Image 1 (tube, rainbow, N blue to C red):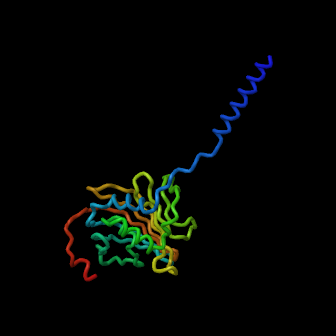
Image 2: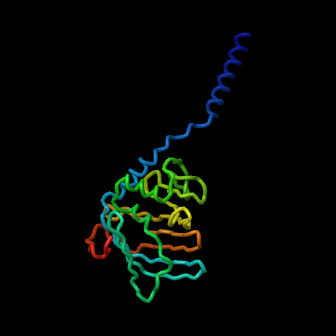
Length: 223
């Protein structure tokens, strides 16, 4: 009888042990360092030497007025950009910077890391996060107003970036990249949402995209 009682106690203790182990928190998954994330991201665009983007942009200014325009955006690796408004009767609103467009052109990982540092993004702070239900790497601080970049975990495509437009006192810029498509060997977001802390917003939707077509150097003028 004593043996049966002891066996029952042992069995209960075994169950408690199993439940205790099962309830222990799962260890955090390994997070890649920023340098490796940027390297994988850069490899997505390693074959993209030039891009011509025909897009429609809807812009809202600080006062709330809205204007739309068709834009032809020409890019050449690593950092040459030219914008032309197709309809001269339509005027473009506040000028946007083109910092973030360098993500989509052929670049070395070291140069992209330097670009992120120039944006004020802390490469020493990396963690998992989610954006619209998608698992991503966050490089940078967690604060809402801190510069950061979110990179999709599965494909290593940039989903969001925020940074100061010009120096530490500049307006905070937030850019969201949506509707990624692969054309030829190039990835590009067919919808980009751009906003500044001063209230300026811009939504650009791609109508057509040409990859690695010929581009005249004179288009960009002297560097």
